[in-house]
Image (cartoon, rainbow, N blue to C red; front, side):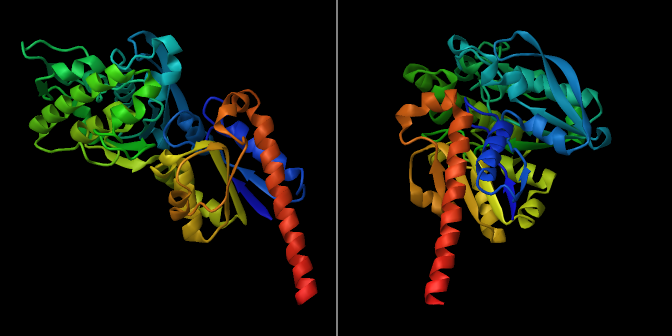
Length: 388
């Protein structure tokens, strides 16, 4: 029996690699003779660069950028395909994990460092950029990213604005005339971990602002500012991008890249699956295991689990999802091919315990799952003998 183990990270608890190891350990305790292949995944957020450099020949290049609060830090980009392609992970320059809890304030944070990483890729002569934009700390509509590439934003007095979430409401005009010319010969593909629009209840601000540190007052300020910014973008390029799936990703970075970089937005798992030939690996397996920290309503919106489920459904392969916790509509999960979801915790109130002992819980859940499969096999054999 060939088992393919392809989890995402368990946020706040386990990396994708640690989750894969725990799943294998649990199954191997029951089925030690089965063959296991671990392939930790990412959907454009934390871990994307490491994952791709594990399976693609390339090098890691250091560059100095500014973090979400404007402090200089060292970040890395990947150079693959003989120097033709750059792999960029937004979280390394503009990520939420770069900030302490008390520093998280999307009215102040900006995506500038991500634009600086794009500039570094252009400096290395790359003609294609593949960029994961999950795990961001900013809700600036991509102002910082675009400013780092030459675009200027002006207020009603004609003064250049410093990019941040609070500045969205002050933008009156956009000057894209000084956008880095090298982008004209560089294709940009965005690995997008969600498919949310720019505005509204499922948009960038209302859906993701709270986890970036925004209280209800800040949410209203940011949403109003984002509406103004979307209007200014439409006036600048002559196109409304606010309803395009993925435009709300990374606090509006998806919209910025669509509008000014000519980017192609793809669900994170789809882009990565193509790069690592995931379909081929699924075809070769008899059983697929995946998982993430929490299965909820957002799982069906472009997340890793949804992408794997759709592939398994299309290829006719059985899939088991192991999660830390679960909430939301079970029917929506079934519609994308997820039939079995097993969780490590009986209630959401115990998530702190999962974070502390995540590997132990996941390993035990995997072992119990394998034991159920073993029992099911015995019952099938008994039934066949009795009624055959």
